Length: 83
Image (cartoon, rainbow, N blue to C red; front, side):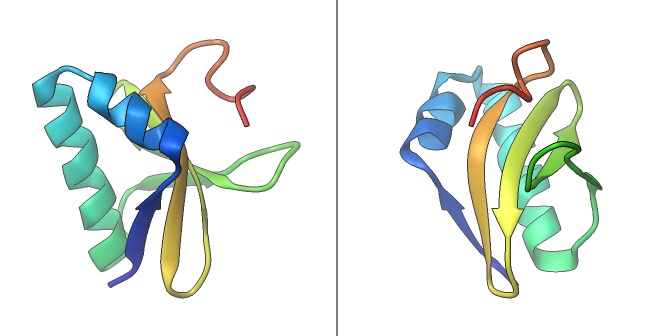
């Protein structure tokens, strides 16, 4: 299992989500960290990946031991522009 680390911005994004959405995103992140399963694609034009969990996206980087969540939010035109 990989360790999940949230940047301060991602932690704030997660706290701002409604309770049911927050539980859904947390569950999706834990599932990916434990099994590697999830709707993950490499980002184009920059480093990193996105994990799709329903209508929410988690933008993250990873290595062999950790997942660093950078942004968590709804899919919108600004989702992929945040760094």
